[in-house]
Length: 163
Ligand SMILES: [Cu+2]
Image (cartoon, rainbow, N blue to C red; front, side):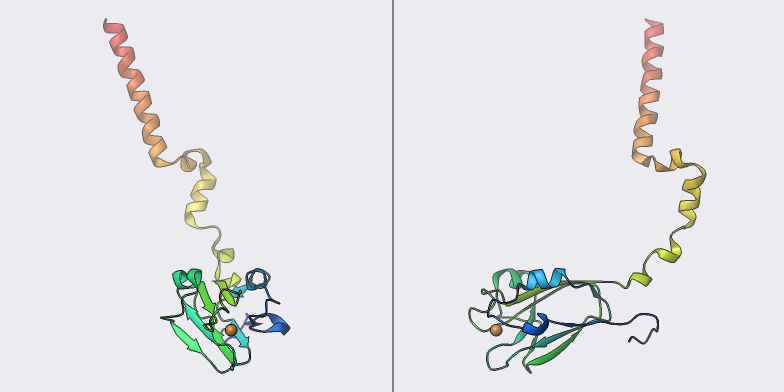
């Protein structure tokens, strides 16, 4: 549960029963795609700390399995990571070969569904659009181009009449 009442934060056990492993039994990209991560949720990394660890790294370090300058390192074997903001998060194990063997996790943290547009869908702008859909859906730049074309045609016809 969160402090804000209505929403229930989820606890994501990394790799489910397999946990955080380099054994190749979990495709963490696939695993991540089956989970919906939202602000307030937690990640739970369970692993044997004799063999593994958890490092949060940058996107570039994640791509190249570079563990030389992690943002933060976890080593207890049962680590909880709070997802306190939206965006991409990257994790890997720094034991040599493990990241390359697939012990790496990239997730995207979404904002809560009820923080979104549902209640404010009809802004004043939308009401204006409803009144005059044609005018307001035309991009101002395109309007300018259209007016220029009209003006150009007018000038051309003037010349045609003169000469
Ligand atoms: Cu490992």
